[in-house]
Image (cartoon, rainbow, N blue to C red; front, top):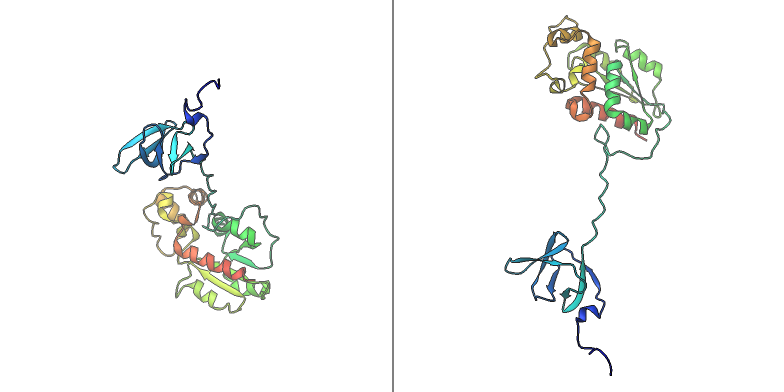
Length: 266
């Protein structure tokens, strides 16, 4: 009279079970076999359960195939979490700021001794300086540094930072720098004879930088010692070897960071 017995058949097909993400360590029971275990992963589209004795079994993700707290559920594989974007860093090691244009150049400046110094500073700190609006200008040596500083007319909103090569006690450079006393000027330096030497020697295939006797042109001496024809060729080799602050020595890094902080003070 009523047709098919309502008690016959698989009850799982008659009732829509809620879907549950099969997160790791979720404890469920396989409704058909009674195997109870925690979710530990997936293999070939099946969920892997591990019981309290360490036994593992794979079960297809069939509708209403599992019991959670005694109630039928349909397990589903959780959606993969979106990959978090990695923070991009500049060559100086700073966190890169995206979608920010270079600022209009401020009055403050950083001076370096020559074009090689300027190129190396640009290679490492260029991104940071453009965001800050600080221009790096090469000098033709520092013999008249005090006069150049007076001509610049530094002030609280017009600060000046100067990076000097071979700034060590008792050197000619240290005596020149001592004549600069303006509070709006900071002079820092590194101990290396030339900015070339501030690059780690292993980056250019050397175990150490050759020692050139005093009185001999340093760059030409380096070229002869390493078998390079012209200083221009050696400089291209050096600059190609530098991609970040990790390629240069710590004294140069410290000096440049101090100068950038000084000239960018609000």
